[in-house]
Image (cartoon, rainbow, N blue to C red; front, top):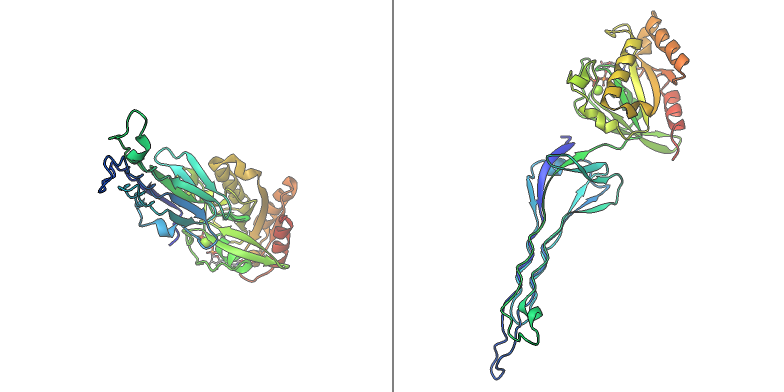
Length: 331
Ligand SMILES: Nc1nc2c(ncn2[C@@H]2O[C@H](COP(=O)(O)OP(=O)(O)OP(=O)(O)O)[C@@H](O)[C@H]2O)c(=O)[nH]1
Ligand SMILES: [Mg+2]
C-alpha cells in the first residue's frame, strides 16, 4: 500500500540520573564522593535513504521510543548511553509539526540526516559537586527528559514530470508505455487511487515520471479525489496535460484543458509556472472526427504551448513524446 502521509510521535530517551555515592572502603575513611554521571538518552534520527520508497513502515507505528540512559553508579561509573534509533525515510519526505503543520525538515534528496528527537543529557553524579567548602556533596542531578514531539510525515514524490488529466484520460496507459511503471488501467474513472512512479529511459538517460489520480472540475471543493494528490507533482519540473481527444470524451478537449488549468491554479498558482506540455491522446479514435483535437491544437499554437498527439494504446508518437520530454531535461 502506498502511504504518503502519517502521524506519529517520537520520544527520545531520558538521560540517566546522576548518582549520589561516597567511596566506602576499608582503611579509607571519608573517601569522598564517587557517584558517576547518568548516560545520555537515545536520539531518534531520520535519514533519507535510497533503500526506502514509501512511508509504509511507519503506518502502524504510533510512538517510536528510544531507550533512556542508564543511571550513574558508585565508584565513578557512568551509566550507559541509550542507543540511537536510526530510521530510514524516502527522499521527498517532509516533516511537519502536529497539529499546526509547520515545516520542520525537508528531506529533498537522498543522504540527509536529521535528529528528530534529542535524547536527554545524563545528570551529573556527586563527584562533580565537591568543592573546597563541601567535601561531601549530597547533591547530584536528575537526567534531562528526552525530547517528545508529535509530527506528520508527508511524502512528496520527486518526479521530473507529472501527468495530469481528467479521470479516464489515459494517463496510466501512457506511463505504462513510456516508463517502467505497471499501473492498473481500466475503462472507468478513478482507476488510479494512489500515485504511480515510473522511470522513463531515452538515449541512455533516465528520468522519473509520476501518474496521479484524475482531476475533476470542482476538485478544489473535494469533487472526485480532490486535489490532495497534487502535492506529488508540486516538485516536478514539467507537467504533461494528458487530454483525451477521442470521440468518447464527455467534454470537448479544450474545455477539459481549461478545467485542469483552473483546478491546478486553485491548488497553487505556482503549478502553472512549470513547463507545460499538452499530450492529446487516443488520437487513434479521432481519425474520423478531428474537431476536438483541432480545437485544442489551435489553442496551444496560439499560446505557444508544446502539443503532441499520441495513441498510448497503439504506441504511436511515443518516441517523439519522450524526445521532447527529455529535451526539457537538463541533468
Ligand atoms: N483507444 C485508446 N484508448 C486508450 C488510449 N489510452 C488509454 N485508453 C483507454 O482509456 C481507458 C482509461 O485509461 P487509463 O490509462 O486507466 O486512464 P487514467 O487517465 O489513468 O484514468 P484514472 O486513473 O481513472 O484517472 C482504458 O480503457 C484505456 O485502455 C489510447 O491511446 N487509445
Ligand atoms: Mg490511472
